[in-house]
Image (cartoon, rainbow over all chains, first blue to last red; front, side, top):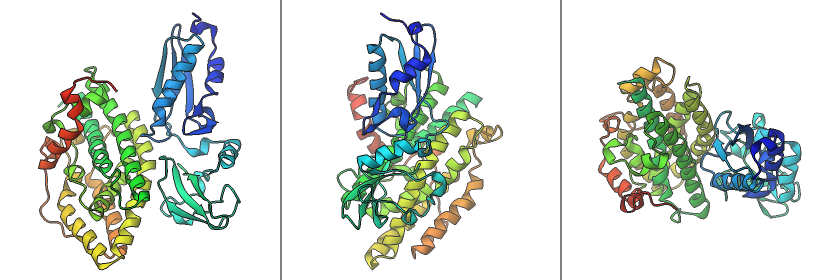
Amino acid sequence: MVTTDLHTKEQILGLLASIVDPEIPVVTIQEMGMLRDVILTENSCEVIITPTYTGCPAMGIIEHDITELLHKHGIANVTVTLTYSPSWTTDWMSQETKEKLRNYGIAPPTHSSCVNWLDPSNLVVHCPRCNSKNTQLIAQFGSTACKALYACEVCKEPFELFKCH
Amino acid sequence: MTQQEALFKYVLRLGDNALIQGHRLSEWCSKGPILEEDLALTNIALDNIGLAQALLKYAAEIEGLGKTEDDLAYKRPERQFYNNQITELPIGNFAFTIAKQLLISSFEFHLYTALSQSSDETIAGIAAKGLKEVRYHFVHSRDWCYRLGEGTELSHDKLQQAFNELWMYTGELFEMGEEDNLLISQGIAVNLQGLLTKWKETVSTVLTEATIDIPADGFMQTGSRNGIHTEHLGHLLAEMQYLQRAYPDAKW
């Protein structure tokens, strides 16, 4: 059995960077900004993650994926801790991550400073398929807590928007 | 009341509000008037239950008896729940749920805004998180108030009636107990009386726009700060806690 002292924090963060979001498998938990920190002691490894939404059911799966991956690499004593502060924001996503979402068919979030949350209908959302801005909000709540439903008036396709948070 | 008892009761109350509200909303699952609303109401339920999980977990830590958030949710009797009575009222018709959501989410918006500045870091962190979610809840119920209020005569009347029936449960939101006063002096809790004016302004603005009359303040229900509830909470708990009561410590 390999013990944690054979792994550095950077190595563990590197391993964890391969874990994908179970609901949007084109992006990793690191790219989403959910992976916050790793704390190593002599015989244990604590992984700190932050939830996107408090009730997101994917968190349980992510916790399980983290533990399983580290066990596979010989790190036996793993705890996963949820932290709420600082609270997760879509502003932590890089431009590259947002492009991945777009290519996957999900319109990426706008920067929070550009959003008037009291008036979501004023938000200009580009269709991830044809890039038209002639799109219409269908519902603020979609298949997961983090997404809203839209339809494109040009290519007529429905799509999801990753809500600014 | 010791500092620990006050903090426990305060966080428990916040958690209970989120839990009971979330459980009620989850009853809309598969019963929404349209698919999008089914998704919206159950998404909001999920946000509430997620928040309840975080808060009850913290409450259990403060209590220090080795309990989990599930123990607190599933193994406490009715008299030990401190949620505001408005959260436990049955979902009623769609207009009733929307009116209830508007009153509660407007309150939570101001409450979490203030609590995100709490000197207790855990409360501040959870409140800041909850605030981001509650904004969407508020916009959802506000926009439905506009549509129902300015829709047909029937939808307008149902919404008006819902606000009339719910109004007597709003006084309790702003009641403060011993725990509030103790924690306010340390910058942990929020002076709820101070939120009343802001809340009224938010609600009045929406109701006026929705052509709904703002009900007059009259008799106000009370009791939840002491664990006194309407007849509805017992029925809700009987269903919610059934599995853990019948099969204690059963695991998924």
